[in-house]
Image (tube, rainbow, N blue to C red; front, side, top):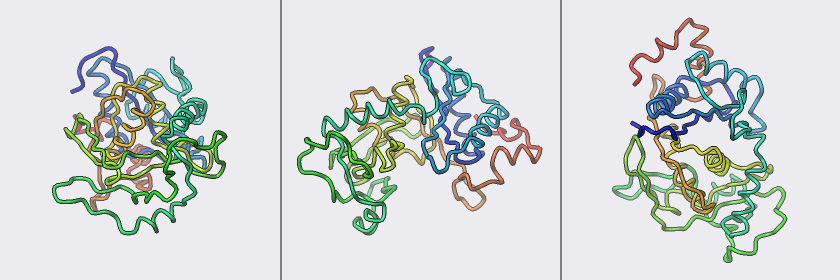
Amino acid sequence: MASSSSSYRGRLAPSPTGYLHLGHARTFWTAQQRARAAGGKLVLRSEDLDRARAHGDFAAAMVEDLRWFGFVWQEGPEIGGPYAPYLQSARQGHYRAAFERLRLTGAIYPCTCSRHDVQESAGAPHEAPPGEAWTPDEPIYPGTCRPENPAGQPASGCPGLNWRFRVPDGAVLEFVDGQFGKQSATAGWHFGDFVVWRKDDTPAYQLACVVDDAAMFVTEVVRGADLLLSTFRQLLLYRALGLTPPAFFHCPLLTDERGVRLAKRHDALSLRSLRAQGRSPEDLRVGWR
């Protein structure tokens, strides 16, 4: 259980890129239960930075479906709060300030490599050595554009280029997860230099998430186990930006009848479809703790 404290601040951070499914609800329910157990607050943040996929209809459905399921939050896009705005698309100033801080310290560098280039250069995925629990969740960046001198990056930005965070190769990172216990990964082996600012002039997930959780004083991040490796990347960003990281609690993922984790393409298990079938939130939550 989360420790009881009125200063506890949790969050729900869905993306309006499709209808929420039962897996989202299960993880969000854990977040709400932990916030309530701690006597704290729950924040709703809409992670709508994906310009191609985020739509207003999905955003409206997101709020409606969450309320139908029984979620209650104290701050959010439709009710405001002390750390507004709660739409990531309206928080560009926060992200640019963090970007500049990273650039000035030489923590990031511009990169011309496409996703295809990285896949081709990285070759076959790494295999975890004996005793290692982690395997990379994406091709390891081979360092093609990494400068020898971390200082002296362009002062005015590089339009049309990605910017990558320079990881400390060989550094062993650790944190204690509220669900799975002690976790460790090695920078440069389990993950490489990662994108923090995309060539479409939009902050990447890792940077936006860190900046917003810090700015909104989130004390515990509850999310799916598929983001465990992302936590190590984010811990590096917290360190580089001089910010205090929150606690983390990663939830097991719900799967379909074939054992495949739920995604937004599983329309039959979307909250909207389940509601249309006459299912009740109470019925769907049977067995949840």
